Length: 222
Image 1 (cartoon, one colour):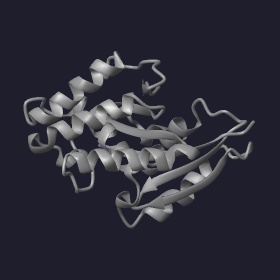
Image 2: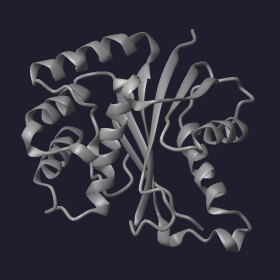
Image 3: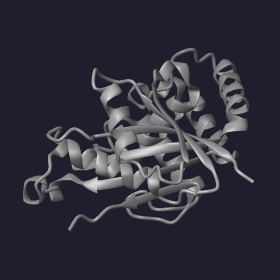
């Protein structure tokens, strides 16, 4: 029997010269029939905390820390899953292999989205519209993804304010990236959230793990 899953994709520190050591690409996976339920429940949690803004890791502060901690609890209490790949950008040697950094970026998206795909299922892929290249990103992904099995039913851009699950992807992706790329003393609210994620996940967010809930894989380039 075929099932359909929505994959909400986000990236962090993926710009070539942004002075961050690790690049991350990640996705929140949700069974298609559960999208409305999760959206409704997260909106209810927002209302309980008088939180009416868009959920963004960059906006995390102590003023709404309990909302963010409750959001982490909700994620771990559900069937939602997160997966990310990390790459040490100092090891990227595009020139040696005759391709551009842009090509490399899409090769990494291929690694993210083709891992552990069940060919009996179908997948809808959503990318956040962040810049004028968003439409090009969709076109390139359609070209590089392994579509011979027909598993990727739809690939499209959406605006983050249109999807609470896209916002959740930004939130978790931001936590994973911050854990390795930023000064832990810079934002105590973010540190508390990361510790909460580690407590639930019971995995090291600084290395490859094999968790089904928060799966992190560091690619070693050769």
